[in-house]
Image (cartoon, rainbow, N blue to C red; front, top):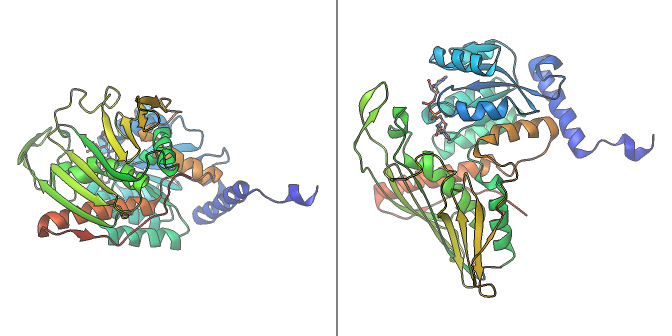
Length: 389
Ligand SMILES: NC(=O)c1ccc[n+]([C@@H]2O[C@H](COP(=O)([O-])OP(=O)(O)OC[C@H]3O[C@@H](n4cnc5c(N)ncnc54)[C@H](O)[C@@H]3O)[C@@H](O)[C@H]2O)c1
C-alpha cells in the first residue's frame, strides 16, 4: 500500500469521525447502523410528516427507528403506515427508548426551540422544520450547544438546494443582469385549517410562508443589512378543524422590504389570505414568484421557490425571454432531512446552513419590530455567502 492510498479522503475521514463520535455518544456502534444508515427518530406526526416520511423511508442513508407525537394515535398510525418499529407519546420516552442519533423535528413552530435543545443535550443531530428557534438569540444558543456537543443542527427550508436557485445564483454572479437593483418574491395561500398554532404567538405567515422567499432572496442577493415592514391581520378569526373558532394574534399579511447593501433592495409579499387556484399544491403554479432585475437583464423563477419549474431570462443581448433550468434533478422541498442524513453518513455538505436559517429568523423578528415601532431595523447576523459558487 502506498502513502496516498493509506490516507483517508476528507469524506471517508468525516464519515469515520462521525461514526466514531456517534458510537461514543450512544455507547454502541449498532445505534449508528452497520448498513450506512443513520438511526433516526421523527417527532411530530401531523400534516408535514406525510410528506417527509415517504422520502425518509426510501432514503439509503436513513433508518427510521422511532416516531413520537403528543397525540399518540398519530404516532401509532404513522408507525403502522411506514412500518416503523417504535412509537412514543413524549420526547422523554422517545429519548429513553430505542437508541437513535438523528432527530427530525416536525412539530408545531412554537415547540421547535425546546425540543431541539433537549435533543442536542441528549447528543442527537437535529433537523428542524422552520423555525429552528423562536428568536435569533435562542437560535444562536442552540448552535453553540450543537458545537459544544459536536453535533449538527440544520433547519428548513431548503430552497437554496434547487437547480433553479443554482442557475439564478450563477447568472447573478456572472453579471448577466448587469448592475442588480431590485427583486420581488411572493408566496401565499388561504391559510392552513388543520392547526391553530399557525395563527398564535410564535406562528404567523412570515415563519410559515415568507420564510421561503426570504431564504431565496438572501441566498441570491446576500445577507440583509436593514429591514422595514408593514404587517397586518386581515382575518381576525379562523375556523380550525377539531377546534372551531380561534382568535388570530399573529400577522396573516406581510410586506417586507430588505436592504442587501450596495443599493440592492428586495421585497417579500406573503400571507394567509391569498386566493390561489392551486391551493397548497405548488406543482400547478406557472407564474413568476421570484423576479430579479438589473440594468442589463431580467430573471423570473417559474413556480414557487420550494417547487420551482424553470427560470426565465431576458438580457440586453437576448431580448426574447428564454426558459432555463427546467429539470428538477431530483430536488423536492421535503428532502432536507434526507440530505442532512446523507451529510451525516457520507460527509457531503448541504448548501443549507443553520447560520442562514438564523439570519432569516432575524429578518422575521426585525420585520415585527419594524411594524411595532414604525422604524427601519438594523440586522446583526450574517451567513456565508455566496451560497452557490
Ligand atoms: N403541513 C405542511 O405542508 C408543511 C409544509 C412545510 C413545512 N411545514 C412545517 O412543519 C411543521 C409542522 O406543521 P404541520 O402542518 O405538520 O402541523 P400539524 O399540526 O399537522 O402537525 C404537528 C404535530 O406535532 C405534534 N406535536 C406538537 N407538539 C409536540 C411535542 N412537544 N412533542 C411531540 N409532538 C408534538 C402535534 O400533536 C401534531 O401532530 C411546522 O413548522 C410547519 O411550518 C408544514
